Amino acid sequence: SPIPCEAMEISSVCTHDIPGWTVGIDGFCEKPEVGTHFGKNVFNYAVIEIHWNNPMETPALTDGSGITIFYTDNMRKYDRGRLLLGQNSLAIPPNVDTHYESGVCTSDCTGTLAKPIYLYSALLHMHYLGRGGQVEHWRNGKLMKVLVDSDDYSYDSPVSYPIDPPVVLQPGDELKMNCKFKTKTKNDITFFGESTSDEMCLAFLAYYPKTNFGTCISFGALDWCVDKEGDMRA
Image (cartoon, rainbow, N blue to C red; front, side, top):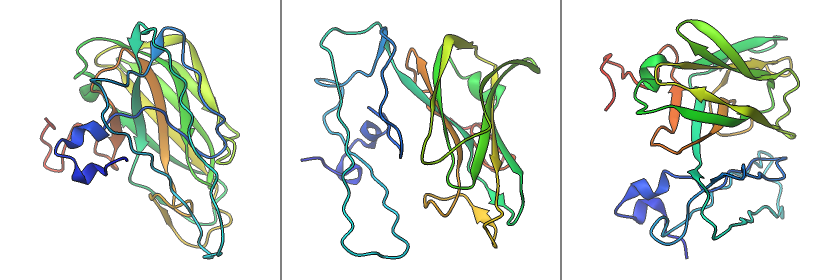
């Protein structure tokens, strides 16, 4: 049976995802040349994490969610990586038609890449106040391409956007995530959180070849690569 990450001596085994899932997603098919490496000598344990939300504490509710993984023993050319982009410091005002938040994966952060990576799909993630979002690719202060431009985001019907042909992210490039919210149904400030009554401003970008570059999230004006004292993260 699966063992919780806290019980493992090496917590890093829990930092790699096999599949991802959210409400309304039917599933993902990888590019023919890309796959997620798992099995012998890769993963010894797997943990599935599911969040339930029952604010009214309605009894006798049941859950039928689960994941089916299809695999091949024909090794594909590239291992898939996942890059998490966005903003984790949110304070969204109530009763407004439009409010924007953004997060940047800075050139300092991508400068830690040893070589270019190829972005080939994107999934936006907000909660019920989310109305739209964009993912932008910048280089030397110039907008290279808008990877995703959605003005009809729905938490219950998310879309995985293909990036075809894949976009080359060079070391030193920047990625920007913009989120649009509508809060006419809210009377209080909405903060970042995992509950659907809280909010998020995230994008999950699939790329290859896989590196240890997996998270690049802003915390207010701070980027992922700078701590509160202004020192670079190791």
